Every structure is written in structure tokens, then in C-alpha cells.
Image 1 (cartoon, rainbow, N blue to C red):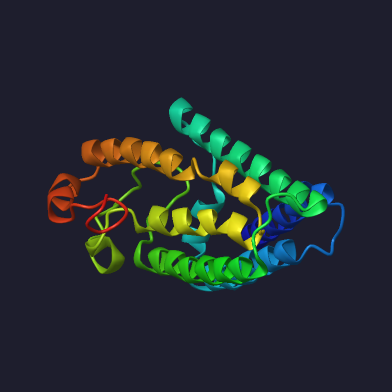
Image 2 (image 1 turned 45 degrees about the vertical axis):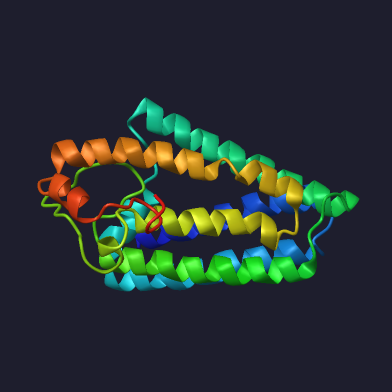
Length: 221
């Protein structure tokens, strides 16, 4: 019950926060791109959350823990939070003042991309029971090298990059896209730090790096 209340409270808090920083600057609740984003984000989130609660409650608990002990990683998390804040406010203002708007078709395409990579994100959760929102080596953790992890070393980050870069498209805002563009850089800085931790503390990870060369995108990086 404690886990259920914790998960539900975070969903409600996230929903209210988005209403505040997106729809308040927009000056209306009748913001089509904003409504699409809420549906694309929270419907899969609730479905995935219920599945994890039933089948993998320990993983759900780890995913709810977002407190970083490292100062460098804590700074990157704060930068991500600032990115989201500015991106959502910018999108709301774009809608309110009809400034730097994208066509509605782009918004629907953004929705499709977001949901597809959300499904990819869920597949990563299914494949790797050790996933946590903080960088750490867990008890009895082993290297996962099958499925998506046989293609790239950080498929979860791949999914989140495409998900988050599609958000300003859903919101139909070029201004918002400007604020979201640094996200891949933040992820690359984070994964480099994460790989150092894994190399030093996780048996077999150095061999895994030699086996799977690419971090995020096959044949590119």
C-alpha cells in the first residue's frame, strides 16, 4: 500500500505540475498540443506503472527513487529539471501568443514518436530488472547483454532522448525545442559517468563494452 500511495502521489504531482507550468503560461486549458502530450505521457505511464506494481514492485520502487548522491549527477538532474521548466513555459507562451508554432501535423507525428519510444522504454524495463533512476551498483547485479542491450549499451537513454526531443513537437513549439536541444548532451555526460562506475564496480562490464561498441545509436555513437 505504501508503494501504491507513493507511485500515485508522484503521478498526481506530475500531472498538477505540468498543468501549472504548461497550461498556465498558455492562458487556457484548450491547448490541443498540451492535451495530446498529457495523453501521450500519462496513459502509458499509468499502464506501465500498474504492470510494474503487479509484476515487478521492487523495480517500481527503484524507479521512484530519484535522489542522486553524486554532486555532478545531482547537477545534471537539476539542469534537466531547468530544461523541462523552460521548455514547458516556452511552449505555453508560444501557444498563447502564436509565436514560433509548428503545424498540427508535426504535433501528431511527435505523438507517434513519443509513444513508440515509450514502448521501447518499457521493453528496456522488462529486460533489465536492475534499472534505477540513480547511478549505483546493486546487490547481486549482473551485466545484461541480451535484447536491446546487445545493440547499444544504454537503450533506456536512447529511448528518453527521442521521447524528450519529441515533446516540443507535440507541443507545436519551436521555442520549446530550443530549450530541449541540450538534453542529448546532458545524457552523454551522465552515461560517461555511469560507465565509469560500472567499469569499476560491475564484474564483466569491461568485456561487455568490447562486445557492444555503441552507447546510444548503432553505427553512430
